[in-house]
Length: 306
Image (cartoon, rainbow, N blue to C red; front, side, top):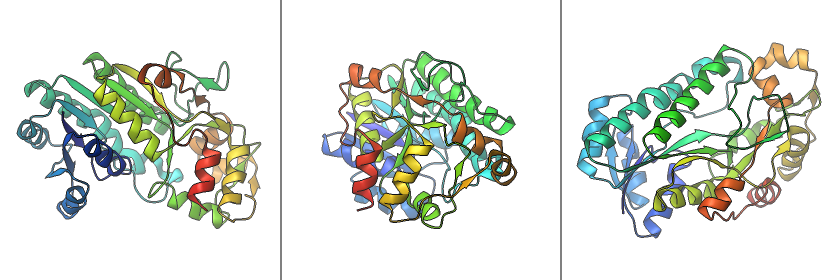
């Protein structure tokens, strides 16, 4: 199968491309930076420079590759999380999830591509009613604040247009693994990642290699619909954060009250840490036959930081 991976040098892209190549697929992967072409070539892909926000650039790249499937992994999330200025930190990613998605779908249609798989997000759900673990049938709601609403609107756009086009949107949990969690671990070691309030908000995690393997299955099976790509153990911050600190050889995280955290980091951070809901992976395991190498963040954190 000829697979076009838009955003091949991102955290997930660099784990996905080798898995696709290893399974015999012909992969064309893109980067927005010419200096990173060599990275993609070493992973076994035909490397292309593409601007995901330029409709002509996207159209030309997809047409030249003549793919059977397009995989959308474009984001602009890099460096340490800037929770206080999430609007600026996520601005380009929001555009890639709206404008960039539209450009890819238009290019796929123009080139006769029959299937699209796109990156969505499923680390936590802002839906505050019901249980602490949500399925794909539950509405996707933002945390408190305009910035969170903008982020969720962009994610909803990806899911709505991709599923309407007959493709699959994969709600990846919080990434960890090589190159994905270094900044977070550094903050934990410096005791700059505190527990907020009771740490009651739930997170869902997924190792990069497991996220990539689920994506390969979605490509090969031409999956349709929304899937939560997370591990087996959604858990409150009060459980996973101290465990991560211990695995990293760090002191226990400090605890700060909600009012202070809101002043220092903003509403989104407080909502994530105290009210977020996790996701169930039952649909992905059942329909895709997905098997996780790291079924729990407990195993993944421990092995990764050994």
